[in-house]
Image 1: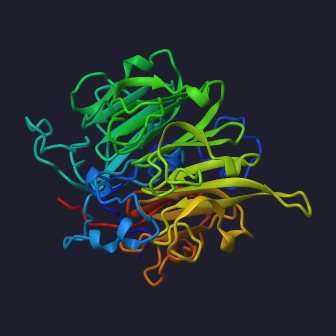
Image 2 (image 1 turned 45 degrees about the vertical axis):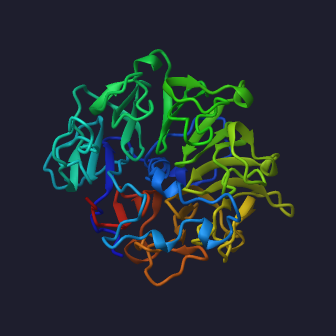
Image 3 (image 1 turned 135 degrees about the vertical axis):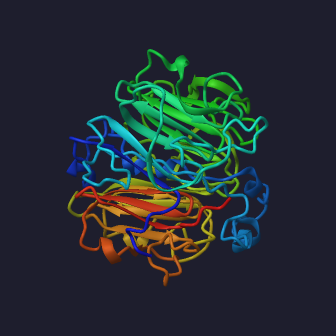
Length: 456
């Protein structure tokens, strides 16, 4: 794949006047500081799926191909059964001199550019099939277009679910828009929105970062509190409130997280992962493929610490469909040097865990082939993983059905470094959609590869 091909389902943001910190390439030990929310943690939070795919799950042996996502889900038009391939949105603090094909001059505000399915008019027209046809005819965009908004937005962070999006301004306010279903927009009413609308119930709470799943939304405040909302009735406790009840407005997650300072959150379609400022990792949701990392296949509707990582410092987490990947600080017993290693677990049917096999892991396991490297970022697609080393190289593993590994000749069982047109670039941030990858270089270049086709 060519890194500079314009993917049909990608997006980028600008914040002119502020460069991305070089520190993103370093495994820092100052984890009490709030992480800067930028390009690298957006696509990892917006894997796009539908309930049809989940209905194929068996509660039996998850190690077999019959009980995990397989190639039989592919459709004749290049799509994947049960996968909703909609718009991707991302944000970055990098300076960019590109015109993005629009000819517009973006100012120092945090602007959002979208391209892909259903965004030809600058909105997220996800749901023309809904009763009343609120969104009108769907217009696709093969080139980036500025997000339209009825209010002036200085954007700090943005994330997408399959059919809804959320953003946070630099003032800590949170907006959402898209298709309402089960309360995931957080406005307390069953109304679809074509433009960003302020979530008024979070007024007075400064939000730092956000994440979206298929059916739920999460937000982390500057104070380290976690808020979740959306449809918790069908997805085994996705919200972490101790029940399967849908919440139509944001609700603070208590229980085991009470008194802890949450630093980041990641959403898969069926589970949620939370990292605290002290490096603890908590997961909740559907555990059928072991994606929760608790050594079993049990689901849980309250946050539960991943005990096998207790005593280690988790610095970053990402959720795929049925797998989880984290970066963990490890101290070398010989020289006391600290480095950040990649740990994976859950469904490994496509090789997304990087352990040279296709087995399921129920607890975190270090990726041995990458043990000599140190990592600073990780992102997950539907059934593949991308990781960024501190030296600025990108490694991918898992499904390569759409070229999302960046090399069409590899089988994805083992992590492989992405070369090609990015070989001479210093990569600073990475992100994944369900079947594609986007990255940002130190010179503010954006590269994408993977699935290109927009499916009706």
